[in-house]
Image 1 (cartoon, rainbow, N blue to C red):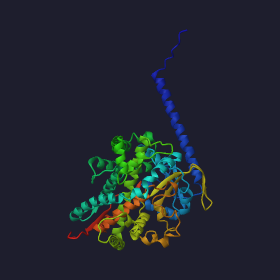
Image 2: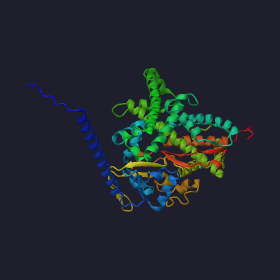
Image 3: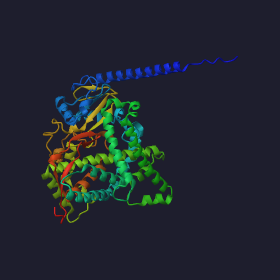
Image 4: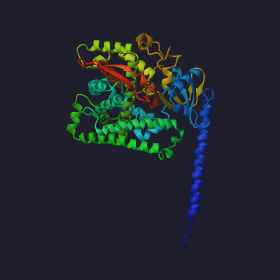
Length: 511
């Protein structure tokens, strides 16, 4: 029997393809509508600011002053209110300690609607992992932040900081004021290159500078993507100029990380080389990652290695850059506290000009000032979760599983019901007696609960070393003509930089 071949005309194939695309689009639209209905119903009992029929609150979140807008909403709608990016992505925006505790003490996963945007960049590292694999990675990485590992980093922090301060000595002679943010960013990256990859040279090479610029680009593009609901769909985003720019920056970041990991793994294939690493005065972060094994003796895969390195490099340098820069702004704005910090540091060091590990615990007033700057200018102003089970709040309201929650750290830290006179810079809020009765979720610059920042001790140590060395070398004051304009770009930045006057305190400087 001869089979009969049925020919289908190209026009009919095109018609069927169009019908299939239309059906898929309709199914996606129905799925979005159903999800919108679920999220809206979940937040029915939470009044909030009016929404635009198409953009939700997205337009207001893109405007200058958006952070203060959320603070004003927090005063108007106690505890929490809905926050919509477009019509299909809605979060319960919370800024009250008991509400924060109810959600963030449980370890719910990060909200995929936001953090999946990171996957192309940092892969499935600790920031976005969830479930057993997150627990496994957290357990494997925790020894990398033990104080025995962190101790030798003090000298590395100081080395990179002094390179920056030497540059500032020259700039302070030539410029009335200048933007410190980029210099702090390059210093923080130089520090991380040494702590993560064991780089021995000071200053960044051309490849490192490309990486720094790529990360700056990626954070800016990520924030724009979160705020622009049209970009939430991957298929649409990768065809836009923004999406292509994001992919180019990702390639720069990945090439940088891959090259360093490849070089290190090649060097450590020799057993003698590995023994040398083990006998070094300290291990860098990559050494630790290459050496960790789970209970079954399984190492991290190459993909896991890159994800954790990229995660650490992003979270470790961008957030620290923000924290240090805003701290120096606070010192410039409040010279009486700047002077008191400087006096404390001089008293601790005496005749020494170097900082040692044991000095850090003695910097009590400096630590209080750092914490107060974190309160007013948290490096990460907002974090997101998706509930994997229902949650009930202290006032009787609740959210079902699947709901999306935004913890607005910036608004929480300026909540007048929690912090009296929240706009006042008062380091004594963090004295032992004033801190003792405070709600544990009232101050959370490193997030909170089981998914808090694993590197917070690393960050605090670096902050103390950099802050102390900066205050010993310079007197900082504001440039009234160029005051910073706060904007959230994953981290807290300034739209126009952070411009400060620097007066050198070095003997014989003539300043």
